[in-house]
Image (tube, rainbow, N blue to C red):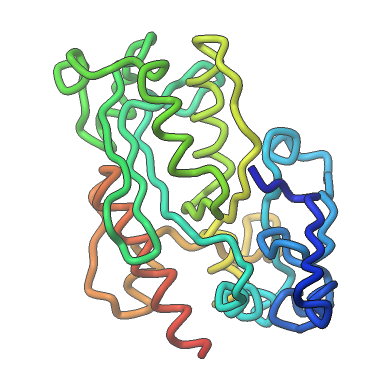
Length: 250
């Protein structure tokens, strides 16, 4: 596994040592974690997600997002994969009950229902429509963990609300005392908030940056897609949104 702080020196191409191009750095000149050999060092902000990921991408501006998207054209960039899950709820003991991973072209890499050790909360069923009947014959998370991680390792895992997705996968692994690997992650929800900046007024009179729901982002970009709160359909929406932004930044 190539981790965030791996340093590779290619003596066959000494002109590339250090990779001194803007395509491997953000708008402020900081190296990207997913460019192998960029010199990136993990940054820990104190947020929980930083403690169990190799990198959790953050952006300060629209320019940052555009530079990040363009960086995937770099020959040494880890490739993006697109993840979505459905869960038993949002609590500290909630688990994954459906997961889907698509590759850069939108092709299916992995999809499975998961039979959890805890009950599916009614409020969660109201969102995704899944009940125990749908997952009762599915494998336990411990049975799919190794195969799922094979598709996420050495990639950039792009999700909409990536911190939540990573937390729920980690919690599912912890139910079986399984080690959860440190993955490179990027939250398209946070990226889109910087890409299409808007501010909303709060009750106290202060304004805050708008965080778009996935369906709002799809509508804004005129993609003609709708979310279904099911793993495969929503992973496809995330993939299409990412590539729409990628096309517009070329």
